[in-house]
Length: 217
Ligand SMILES: Cc1cc2nc3c(=O)[nH]c(=O)nc-3n(C[C@H](O)[C@H](O)[C@H](O)COP(=O)(O)O)c2cc1C
View 1 (cartoon, protein in one colour):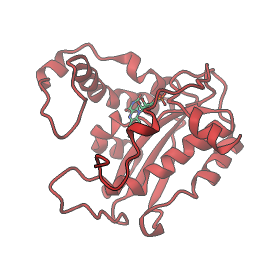
View 2: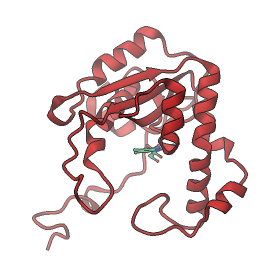
View 3: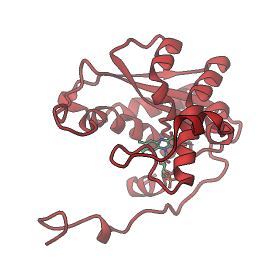
View 4: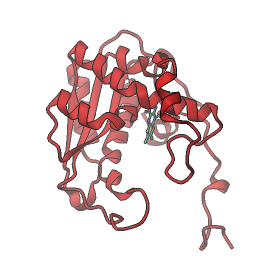
């Protein structure tokens, strides 16, 4: 596919046909995705292809509590899980909520499930002393994760970058033998899209590109 077509049509695919992602296609996807950048080109990354059904189920289960909180916060009109505005949703409300199984169904059902991990011992976090949530560290792993989704689209497949399970990182680490210094960046269901979206909802250029000043002034 043409690059811009891939970029404009790589959507968050959550429904798949039962068709597996062939081993050689997955290999090709990763073989191309690995050209993603990372700070200092450290490439402290490892991708786990989780084929064991019970382990996948557990990863979906571990994603549920944060998916429940996410949903409640959205329903309360909040921008979910942000670190600036305190949420009105309590832990008790989350615990009482019906687990939103439908939100994690793609983790359970996808033909392929990848867990993307990063070695924090190799990540340069230039913003580590700022008084806000760390942002730069993710830049050494999410380009790889996104490249996987772009490459999958190019191969006729699709997937989603899910992060609800990251909130349960210690349990995910224990489940997959991930060392303590390695962070879980994403849990990514992959497969053949049931339906290919081609018109994604995004802000127009005028709303995101400004000259000289943040406000264009
Ligand atoms: C950092 C990040 C975290 C995300 N976490 C989740 C998640 O936990 N679960 C999920 O279903 N989708 C998740 N997504 C997918 C987004 O919801 C999706 O990319 C966005 O809504 C755009 O969807 P579209 O490309 O289909 O328009 C995540 C995406 C990003 C970039």
